[in-house]
Amino acid sequence: MLGASGSGKSTLLRAIAGLEEIAAGRVLIGGEDVSRLAPARRGVAMVFQSFALFPHMTVERNIAFGLRARGESTQAVASTAEALGLSALLDRRPGELSGGERQRVALARALAARPRVLLLDEPLSNLDAQLRVSTRGEIRRVQERTGVTTLHVTHDQVEALALGHRVAVLRDGRLEQLGTPDEVWERPASAWVARFVGTPPMNLVPGERGLCGFRAEDAAARVDPGGEYVFELAERVGADVLWHLRRGEDLVAVRAGGAAPAVGERVAVEVPEARVRWFDRETGRAL
Amino acid sequence: MSEKRQLALMFAPYALGALLLFIAPALYSLSLSLYDADLLTESRFIGFGNFAELAGDELFHEVLWRSALFVAIAVPLRLFVAVGLALLLFRVRAGRTAAFLPSVVPDAAWAAVWIFLLNPVYGPLNWLLGLVGIAPVSWFSSGWAAFFAIILMLAFTVGEAFIVALAARQELPEELYDVARLEGARPWYVLRAVTLPLMAPVLALLATRDVAVSLQATFTATYLLTDGGPDRATLLLPIYSFDMGFELLRYGYASAMMLLGFLGCLALGVAQWFVVKRWRLGLSH
Image (cartoon, rainbow over all chains, first blue to last red; front, top):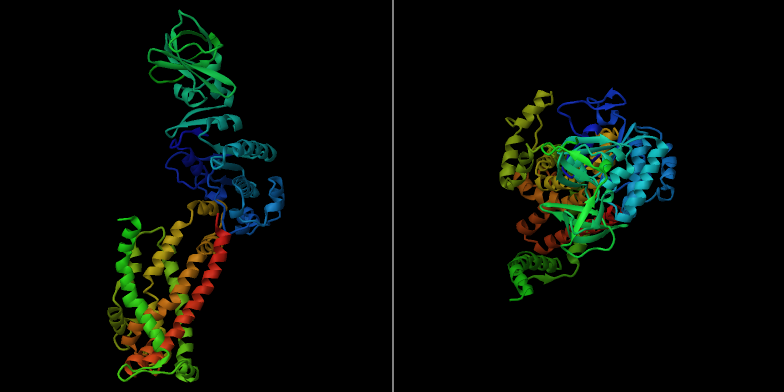
């Protein structure tokens, strides 16, 4: 679930968990209406942004918290800890762990109960950039091994596209698009999604059929005295160099076509017809 | 003016007050404990004579044991009331003022209220007991009844501990309770496994503080309500030393007694500091 802060994604997650009451609608898990069930009876487990570990308990106690609270066997703890590489840390307390280790403990606690649905509330946002990428892979491996349906909330579109089998894009509490990462990337349902997903965002310029959208890597730019655009600056973004161009009020970013021209020089931009997406000028919906 | 000087200047009134009203009298009292002093005739230095006499004073031993029993019952009870109220009123705002209110009533007025509440003939407490078939208790003439009446009276003046416990509870991250709900932990289990252990350092602090506070807090009210009676049943350390000093004019002896009380509280405080320090290490992030 992808959305900007304040778009309601955490609230939605809490509503699914039953921590937040819903005023209307239903929550279905595997076709079963769980809207009226207590959180513990929905078969959901959650990993919080803050990890929400009990600071006074050892790793083992944290992982087994739910099992002990319900008076169940704690036999599964060892294997869950093993799977997440926590076996050597079972006697430590959260205060003695690194951010990544705490994250894994929170994940282990959630998985120990064998939930039907695993809810992850921005689990990577408290980790530093390098750890984020490796933990992202770890979450994906855990998901694939356990096969547990996982709802992962994030404001980071890269994370959403990298992790999700399907991506739900939320905007101001409403579902803007639900689709595979490819669909969200290739066919944004609205101009808003087109601008929200991607770095740089999709270019949107007025055209004859509405708003014309195209991605930087789909455009071919070349210096041309008769071109419509004016060169403003070049910028390296990872493997690519982007040219920022202006046409009247409109700004676009396209992949560089050779050595950067002088500021103010004219540039022509061509986009294959098949790579152009059209959006309604009024509603922003895809045409 | 430099910042240091400004700070010193602002601190000065407090330092002066503390020196004149607390530190100087405390040091004076400390020195008095080594004298035979009635403050009317010339004081006589007697070294540790007062302490030697205390060691053989059977009444003092009795008062000490009674004070210990009082602390052993009153402190857990007061803590239970304060923490219980804090946990009950954590999610509800209504009633917080009522929980704090008894603590702002002046001691003398509080005692007057209880003289009425405990009146053996027309007091509401005996009337309430009568409703459940318990015979009227003569609160002021039966020793144990008076002792427990004093404890009962102090069980309500826990406003400060209540506020501290409430703040400590509010400090606990709400997400821990979300986890507990999701994992299906029952309220009693959450209280035992999460809330109380996480509040433990604060509770230990409150408990140690209350050893001194409950003894001090009982003074005015007990003095007015029972004056140590009947037959010494409510004679606690502060009243005994007050009588010794201000009634019998044995200031040196009274000072020695209070010094021992002070050292006892200090020892408890230091012990608690070490315990909490170990807890904090376990809890820190």
